[in-house]
Image (cartoon, rainbow, N blue to C red; front, side, top):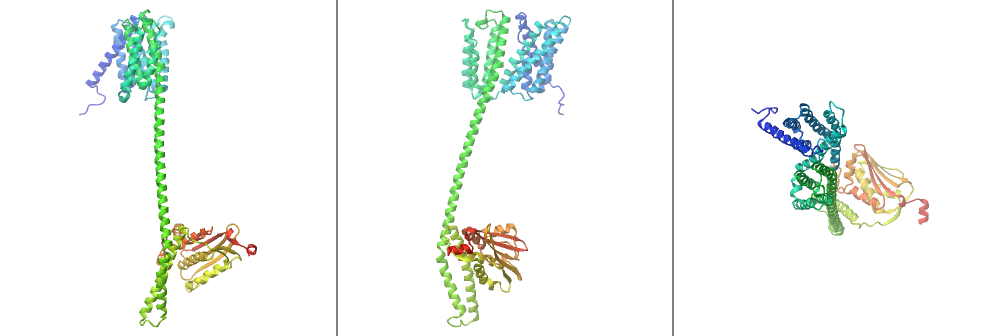
Length: 568
């Protein structure tokens, strides 16, 4: 059966025992240093290291660290024969400070603390100073519970030692413990060179020169920052702290301060290291962030350049494909336009000979089926010629080889000629009504304009059921020009069907439309011819109610009575 999560395992007991031993040792070291310094303020490593453990391993270790830290503090006080009040009050105060530091870090910095951000480092130093100052009053009150408060000695002692503990130990341990492997593995040679430079700077300060050479340490740390980023700075500070503190405690402090008492040497070195941590770490974090921002901007610029290059390549490829398609279309159009004579010549022979056979010009054919077949051949040839003419006309327009031969003629004559050509086709099927056109003339290609109207009127006849009505007329619109309209009462179209009808080779997909043959080029050719004259062709239709097609020729092609007189 799986054990409950609340049950304490042997591994947990081992962790608690190890933490208790660690914190007992740290508290003992702090007390022993205070004794060796003869009452001069020294660092207390317990608080800073305990908070670092909470931040490194997660806040699930928080209560373990608090409990074992309290136990270790009480144990050391008991070993050192302190009074009952001091044995309980001081460890409780240390534990309370640790708890308050963790709470304020969560509230003012965030649950995810990253000392690689200089703002978080500055906030942490401010929190450490604030908590050290506030807890100093509690310590002074405890030390003089039965006497007047002597803040002049006890408050600074507590404030300085607590602040130094958190500022010196916590950021360095957290940075080194949470550093990515690549930060060290990728910069191994640089970090080794930086440590060598720091070693030289430290060695200079221990030589019996009695010169103020401590300034060389920050310079070496700055070089370490440039070589390894903030992780390099943390490594250099940790090495400096370890070497200088160990040498000072052993009685071999830096030469410039070796003549001072041990307590004052420790006090000076601790303040010096604290200042370097407070100044160098945020500076290193800012330099590292600036470097990362520069690298990110360079990477972004590189990606942008790659995207732009890809876009330019795509644009060139698209233009090349468009040019190729345009050349292919031009070649197709020119080919079809050049094939006009080759395609029409045999069809003219077919039409001519079938017409002779059908009319029995040289005598009877002998059997009535021959006469019937000759008529079928003639009708099929005529239909095929119409289709080929449509394709060739569209190809000529695409190739830019359609010639516009302008002349001046009345709009009324154009409408009348178109109606006369198609009156027999409409006879017995639909009624064609002519509205009196305005007395104006137009300057255009008469054959092409007539072809447009023939296409429009043919479609109206084709798609209007028996008994329907077609109206053709014209309107002189001063704003747009002359508008020639063909309206029917046929099957009508939707907007989608209108767009399809104006597309090349498009046909309206309806039951009536599909019963008629055709290439679907009538409307596209008509619109192209209209635009060739600077005008346009518009359609308005309602399914089941009919269609109105409007051919518009611009004002520049309309000649009224006065203009005609001048032209003449």
